[in-house]
Image (cartoon, rainbow, N blue to C red; front, side):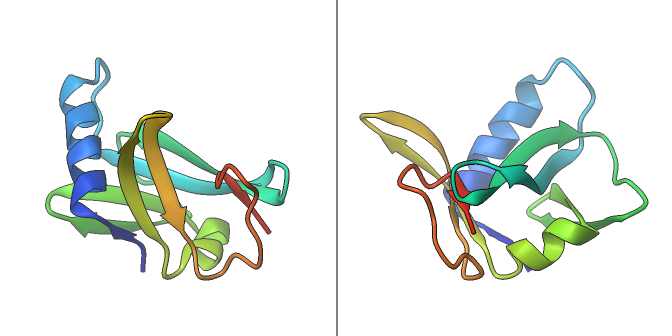
Length: 106
């Protein structure tokens, strides 16, 4: 299961409300790349693809493909506002190591 904090939910709701395209949720993926081997990717989505699981919380749908689901199990996604910049953070218990920017893991 993936958990979105209240801050992350509010950020997603804000983006969905202002999107020019019809969207119903957020697609979260793990892709090869980044400095540690895997990187997180997010995109707005209208509907789930056939190989995706749908997680719903407070009216927000999160679409996760089968390959990414195992990498993201137990992950908490937060949205933080910092002096250096705002953005989503991932607290992933499956990550053996993470890069210094927190966007990549192995």
